[in-house]
Length: 336
Image (cartoon, rainbow, N blue to C red; front, side):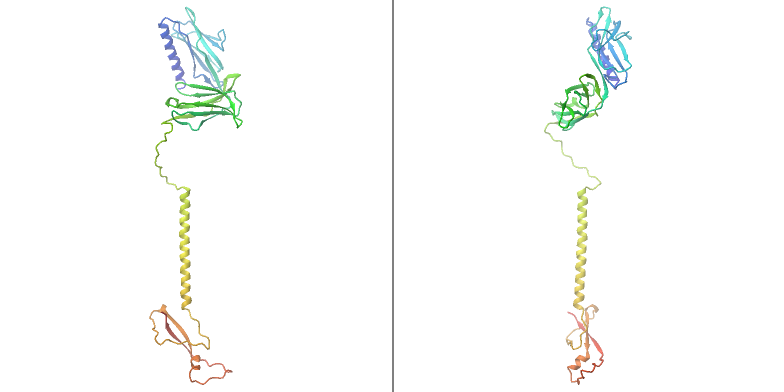
């Protein structure tokens, strides 16, 4: 496609010249470059000069020189000539042809540019490369190198050029701010920018990275319709936090219930536990107590028969003597 477009352009220009010839006027020749007018250093380029079928010779001029820098015989059917440059020489070129009635006037000037001489600048869109209908966008071409001018180009069927002088911004960079708009579908495309110095206007920097300018199709001030979010398999960070809080709450609840159960169990055991009576203490039995058949509701009281005898008519024993060993007995008590 890169090589085809210049050839088609030259073909269209030659057809226009044939129409002028049929009308009885001597058409001005046209000049074009293949593969293009912007060529990296060391590359070859072909310049085509289109005249008429009656052309006898073609002459190539460079940088407004009055004499030919190169001469070529016409190629069949005689309406064009080919000038091959082994190295891409930057400059301004034009051509003319010799006919039986004399020399034609010169063609319009073709500017042949060498790119890649300097480091590439950066290109960005402010605020966004997606522009609504009728809106404007600012394109910033910037470099740390002190270029005198910047050129913005748009690729496509009709290549567009914008040129601005550079200025130094607050960050110490040299920049040019290109305002493009009002936006419509014809401005969609890929843009690049270059920097150069005024003393060598045909020697450009390398191309910036491409920037795709997109036309949203919506008028200014119109928001696109909201769409429902697409569910994803992964969890967000706040969902992980919520799950962690819930797990911690459940663990604390189980720990609290466990402690409560343990405290209640110890309370029941302390209420049912009875100490052995000490000598001199008595334990009276309730004659109406009901003995439960359930083992867990039964408590036993230790009765000291020696203490019971002290309250009966049995003769007392001497304090110097140890009390006699008396049998003990246990009586069940009902717990209500």
